[in-house]
Image (cartoon, rainbow, N blue to C red):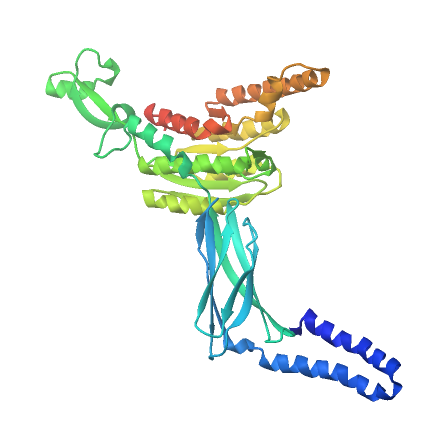
Amino acid sequence: MIRPTPRAVLLFSLGIPVALLMVVWNPALWPFSFDLSLLALVVIAVDALLIPPRRSLVVDLTAPKRLPVGNEGTIEVTLSSTRSARPVRIEAVVDLDGPLETPPMVVGHFGGAPERLGIPFTALRRGVVTLEALWLRWRGPLGLVEWRLREGLDRRIEILPAARMSFGPAIQALSKSAIYGTKTQNQKGEGTEFDTLREHVPGLDSRMIDWKQSARHRKLLSKEFRIERNHQIVLAYDTGHLMLEPIDGLARLDHAIEAGLMLGWTGLRAGDLVGSFGFDATIRHYLEPGRGSTYYARLQRSAAQLAYHTEETNFTLGLAELNARLKRRALVVLFTEFVDSVMAELLIESLKRMANRHAVIFVTLQDPLTTRLVNAEPQDFTIVAEAVVAHDFARERAIVMERIARLGVHCVDVPVGGLSVALLNRYLQIKQEGLL
């Protein structure tokens, strides 16, 4: 779209007071007063003829498809001209929707050799960014007319969760537990999968004696077991409004995703199948459990698709749907939050049905505000009252966690800083005890 600039409007507007002054100074000059505005229009028209047309501009835009949260990226715009002419100054800005810092306007030139403009941006949080349009603006030699061009875009940038900060504890724990290593290692004596027979010696569990094989070989033989692999692990994320509460600058959901990805990476390296599930008032996402270290990229991309929702979570619907989709016993890791005992009743009822078929880890984050209020020094009555309310809230929460634990559910309720390590340790404990 071509349009006059403020400079052109000012030039045309100045012709009117100048014409009035000419008439006042000499009334005989009134026929020439119209020529001033006409002259301004002619100058504007000449500038419009000299401005490079839209058809002479060739635009090419490239953007990264994926970017970890907190990192910086660049949207590259390449400008070239179909005809050789003097370089023209051009301004470019990207119109986007998503969790990105607003990119700045960049200035370049076109008309000579192709020029590449880099528009920097920063990924603020996890999500999907939609590049909606590219706006370009350039002016004529006199600056009286400008072209404004809007190029529609249909590009998406996935802002992936940054979970590598938690890989250090995972690697250390794995090496100590010998789930994998430089060479294949089998943990015998644990788990439920039969490995081999060995001669029974004092100190071995007598319940492991295989009497049938012992009678055949005429000596006592004991069974040895190893930790099973190829278990299904499902990372179930509650995406309801309670998971939007920020803790240490990030929403509860983001902390859960970070810990879940760390556990997923560990499970994939240990030979298990890992999938993900997202729900609140309805089912938002489901990724079938898969195996292999390369499957982690799919887990990471699926986590980027989990949006923030303000609906209240329907545990009955979500957990029943997940229970129906899982055809064999699995480890379900539920990342969620609750605020009162009324909401917890429906949650407990749904967990009870889930725990009858699967091993369940119930994961919540402790609120640092509650801990701070309970431990505050009683300097005045207001602080004491807040401490009493916070203590009652913590007591009710502990009662709910105890009821959930009695169902056979493994509960992880820790501060945000210890979530990843606590979750990993609980997963290793379940694996070693053969609870899957």
